[in-house]
Image (cartoon, rainbow, N blue to C red; front, side, top):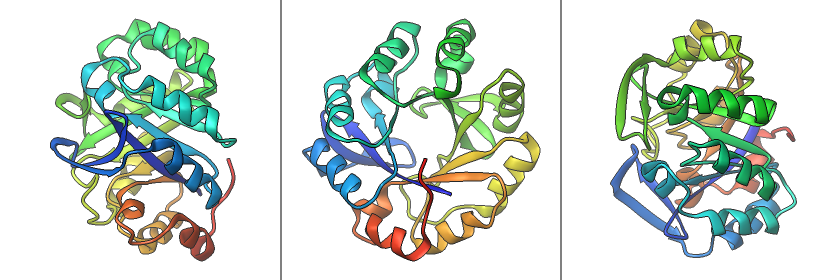
Length: 242
């Protein structure tokens, strides 16, 4: 299972939200590049970078920070947040981003998404942000009527191979992952997922390792609050390279 540290950006700083609420934003570092380099030094096989402002605005707002991170590390970087046009998608590809994460565009602009899938292929990752099984979009500020598992099943038929499953109700809460809902989603959708949201410690990572179809886990607040370092996680539970 791939262990992926997250770097969430807002106004050029490293932050975390709680349950996707922009009113509950905590700043952890002022220098994203130093955080990226430190995580790489601790053994991170790749980084998950999110432009939170971009996710809410619908266009990139932390492009220079993302570009700096990509240039400063040798490991792959996947980026999401505000990628809603083919032009932006190509721009990130040109920066050297390894994997591009899209969400809202899948349902809000299917034609643009189809072009992104054609251009990006296996480098395209669909983020399924879920509340009680229902898809949320626009930086989690809008709910849809779509069941995430149904959408994932359809996207798999269209050739999407990488998915991130985020439990918005648990993200940033350190309440632990919901193993049963994750199992159910994988069984219903038939896709493998990278899990995000709620990881509180090594016990959650160990649990996720037992669930067939979990290909990775994104680690955010559990690292930034000092509960455990990425190096310690690697030493205790291992992980694979991408």
